[in-house]
Length: 350
Image (cartoon, rainbow, N blue to C red; front, top):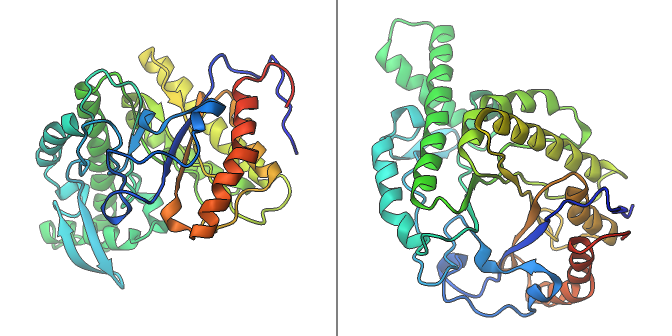
C-alpha cells in the first residue's frame, strides 16, 4: 500500500536524519571523525546529514573523541554463568557516581560544540529497566539470578519468594534511577541536544500482531520517569522480511501510538513535549535484502502521517557485502532519495 499524504496529514516539520555507518572508518567498525564523504550526497534529497545525529560510540562531529557513555553496569555471561562483572554488574550494585563522573569527563569531548542541537542517542542494550521484561532479554535470566544471589547473601534466611520480590524491587528502582540520572547529567552538559535512549519504549516481540501490547504498555508506563527526563524518544520500527500483508504497518502504528501517548503524558507533566524520532532502516532486519517499494514507503511515510517529528535512518554498511553496498547507493539515488524528497516536501499526494 502507498500512503496518501494530504495537507491534513502533514506535520509542520518532518525531518529524515541520516545515521548510516559507511563501514570505512574507525576501529572495529566504529565511525570516527574526520568522516569520509558519502558515495551519494543525501542532503540533495532533503535528508539531514550525518553530523546531525550521534549515537553509540560513533564520533562524527568535528573535533570529537569517542566515549564510553559512562560506566553502565554489565555482566558477561556464558551458558547462564557470570564470567565478568563491570561496575557492579547490575544497577542496584553499581557505582552511579563513577558512571556520572565519566560522563562529565567524556561528554564535552564527544560533543565539543556546547550549542550543538542534533540527536544525541544513548544506545545501551545490555539490560532494560523493567525486571519483567528481562525474562525475554538476552542474558536476562543471568542478570536476574545474579540479583537474587545478592539479596540472598544479605538475607540468607529468606525463602525464594521473598528473595525474588526484593530482587525485582531493587532492580526496578535502581535501573530507573540509573537511566534518569544519566539523562539528567547529559542534558545539563549539552542542553541543546535531543537526548534519549535508543529503543525506548520497547516494542516487544511480535508487536505487529498486538499480542504483547498490553504488558509492553505497562512497561512503558513504569519507565515514564525516563521519558520525562528525555528530550526525544527514539523507538525502533525496523521491519522483518515476509510479514503478512498489513502487519508491518500495524506494528508501526502500535509503536508510534504508544510513543505519542507517552509524549503527551510527558508534556502534561512537564510542559515540554519530547520529539518522536523512530529509528528505521532500508534493509529488512538481519538480511541483505532492501525493503520493497511498499515497505520503504510505509517505513518513511507512515510515521509522518502518525505525527512523528521525523525518522532516523540507521544502518551499518560494513555488515553487508561490497556488492550490496553498491546496490544500496543505487537504491538511494533511484528509490530512497526521491521518496524522502517527496515526503518531506509533500503538500499533496504521494
